[in-house]
Length: 423
Ligand code: SF4
Ligand code: SF4
Image 1 (cartoon, rainbow, N blue to C red):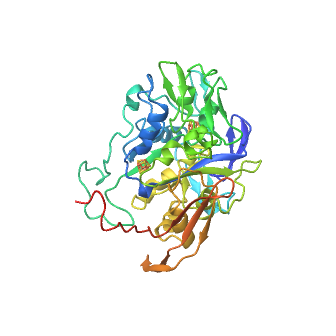
Image 2: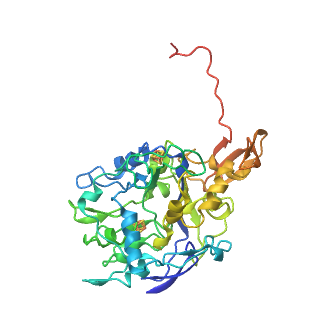
Image 3: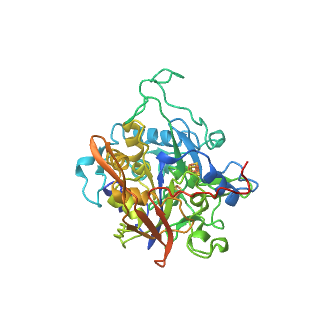
């Protein structure tokens, strides 16, 4: 195995191939706090890419209810348990070693799926990525246990009525929005014996070459997020293609400019922001201060990678939900959770403006600028004074031209006294 640097883990790790990095990387930030599980994103994807025979069970985008739900069922818990069996008690972070952007969350001392695989020999020898193949019934529903909360420990169906206040609720659940993370060190690429999966050099989108795939399902086994899926009618595997014609600006419906994917553009809750981040030749993020993704992940550190401990360096980031017990969130998002929630709870003036950009336009936003407005509100949050300004945030497209302009305060529209549909 080669040694590659995984900045999300703050250390080098083993990976079957040398690092090879695109010029720009497809990435996204989801604000979990705002999702209403309407599944509009899920259906936008389904009706675009997976509506054909043999794809009935496929949901490249799904929104699941945590902690119990999962598609496939228990995908995360099963894998965490497998790693724990290989390296008992070893999955620990040292957050004190955190520094700047090279090790933003500290150093992970546990094992990734690539490292754990070397310690576990099956009938075929060592795997390249520790994983498993879910049985058919575990793919049966994209949001099983919908809205089922975690209640009092050890007492099924008993809700904790006392613990219903922030910062953490005694009874809780939340929605987790998932699609392929177009990882920097993909488990699917590592696992494929046919070298049928590749990462595009221009935007880091991970694709399965349908003509090379022979349907061995090693990608299904090796992806920790379980996002490649096997199609029985064609006997090859398929996965999210990040709506690449839209990213390339080749979708005639959207005016031939780089456009967000279908799931992002359809989001009713305005929780999603997707774009491209620029990379250095060594795979680290090039400084790009006014790219909203760079700002949210690297400057404010309000958005965190999902299960970075698996080691694939996923390119999907999440603003964690405020009301969920921290221990659970730290298992999912690592040691940056406290800081992220603190920043989100009392957002800086700039953060509040940037949060307004989510889902304001289908066009991809490459950078932003802010025009300052008047102070409109003042309160106290966690014992500290907090002020709100009605700033205007302007999103700029690839060519630097304005694609969206909005304010922190939602604008009012006064309807005229007489209108056609009044009753
Ligand atoms: S999420 Fe899974 S399918 Fe997508 S790139 Fe990562 S390992 Fe591959
Ligand atoms: S469309 Fe947006 S709000 Fe609705 S389920 Fe999807 S991510 Fe959540």
